[in-house]
Image 1 (cartoon, rainbow, N blue to C red):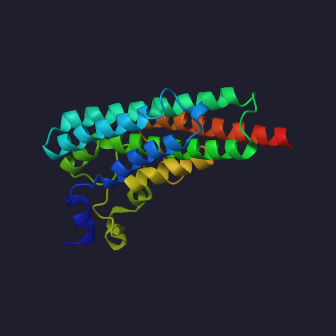
Image 2 (image 1 turned 90 degrees about the horizontal axis):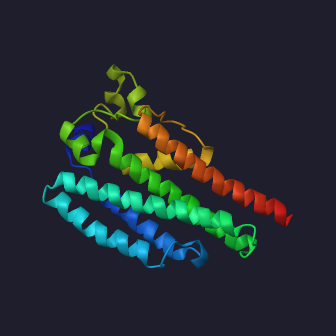
Length: 219
């Protein structure tokens, strides 16, 4: 069996998404206390507690429950991110953080923004990883990845005849959108993806503008 066939026929590994959730919890613990909503242990604990039944439901074939739990975790991390960004905006006029601390806080929130929305794209595209594997379709229904733009008769030579995206592809999309404030190599097709991308870009732009304004203030 060719590598491209194995890529699409094998179930999509979930390890990268699990690590992404754990990374969000770790980054949250590294934030200054004044940028954390609620007790410092609350978000990491919720992530770990919800990840356990999420993994178990996937292993035992409870796909509907797995999807609901995944969306709940994504929603919680998104609210925590937005809350921390709001607290960063409120803390800026007080000058309680040094420029170095502000740069560090902004960088951590920017990175969290990338991971959170990569998880959204991975979770929602084509109905989620489980449905994408079950339907066994080429490419994506919500993003126009470069592999999908290769002419059909030329895909075999690029080892993408039966290609579909994995978590790292969605992470790259989220990273480039937060870096350039717009879609780059993977244009958005679905309306829900466009809405999420606008929210992601707005958060990223807000963080960058805050850092630039504080840097100008220091100068």
